[in-house]
Image 1 (cartoon, rainbow, N blue to C red):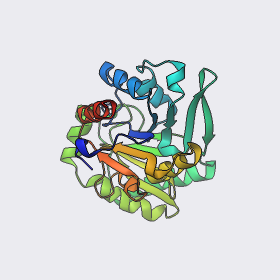
Image 2: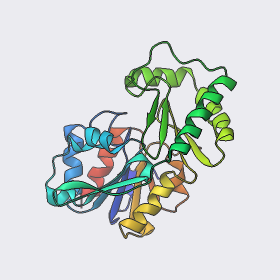
Image 3: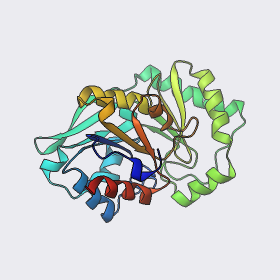
Image 4: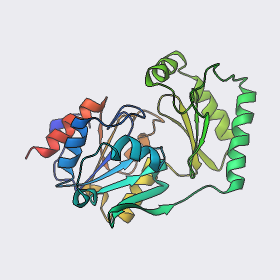
Length: 258
């Protein structure tokens, strides 16, 4: 769905992707988004799902979200593609569960990346911004330009190298048949256990938030084939596609206006 006027306003749980939906890639939400989310929390539960760690959610979302503890009790965070879950209770963010890799799994994944680079004769860029490999506990993420690369450089690389990551994904999946390998964001590749994607996240929300699929609305920016929001389509949850953060703001305004 991409027509705002057709979006029902009676959904109990609104689920947002983080990067390029609530905020630009790895950036903090702006004041307007903070205000809109706070208003929406007064009438609905909100869940946020993304590939980043909880610390990244704190930086991008919580550090700028002006909401009382009473309202934060309606906000549920599912970092690292819902392999971790945090909720607000007793005036703090508490971890409900975490499903981290074993040491053997980590070693297997890192080895598979090295094999993939060799097979494709891939050379890392001369300038790297932060870590190339980030261990997020239950997910390992490779970022072509590094974890802290500026958004404009990531967008440029993505435009100039449209097929590089898809080739990596194919070879890496061959070496990791029991893992899930997904292109993510502008320059990343995520590896999780098999079956871990945003569809899995929806099922976790159904279970832990005691909310039916019919009462959910998912908002994301990448429903294209093999996009990281595509698995949600298979759950039957109503999905709304945005092109940018401003589209998300317009949708929230629509949900707020009775």
